[in-house]
Image (cartoon, rainbow, N blue to C red; front, side):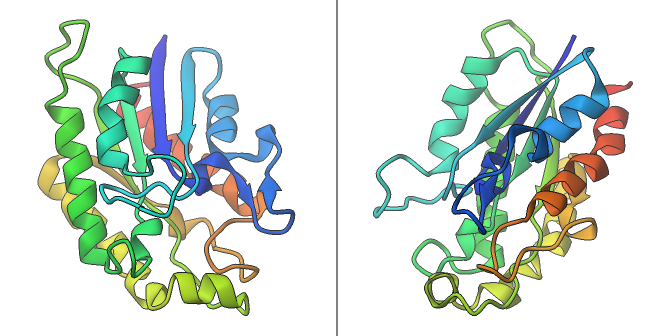
Length: 213
């Protein structure tokens, strides 16, 4: 059996901007991917609201620094065949990083952590890595989110190109989630049920290729 880790933020957790709750399990993109791939693959959803690539959020009641937590998560779920990294949207907050370049630097750190992880099972090669750029932020009338992500619409629009370049440089797979999904104007950041399902469907062929299925 192949094992895939989906390491992400609220877009992976399944935050629903309409209900302020969580999308149904079957609507979250890792679940859609799991169903499409079938029982020969285990897809692990590891999403946390507010998670950044590699930056501290001093206002949070949990550790949202993706780089600090990732080694523990890798040990928890190893051995792994593929790690999907879909982070960067929260880096757009001015209090976190505020720039697409900051997110790219954080994503590069995550890639290096996976590549140089001390795996428990003597797997020197380690898993394949798929970098996924989240859908760009959009304009919203939600004043709280608009202020929280001030400047993020323009910066997040750069992520796909910069992540693609990083993936090429680091010999990782790449998928632009913005090619199949759009953020909701309800808060400018999150996805409705159809758009999170679309990521699961869109990413499937890339995952199949990387797993050799």
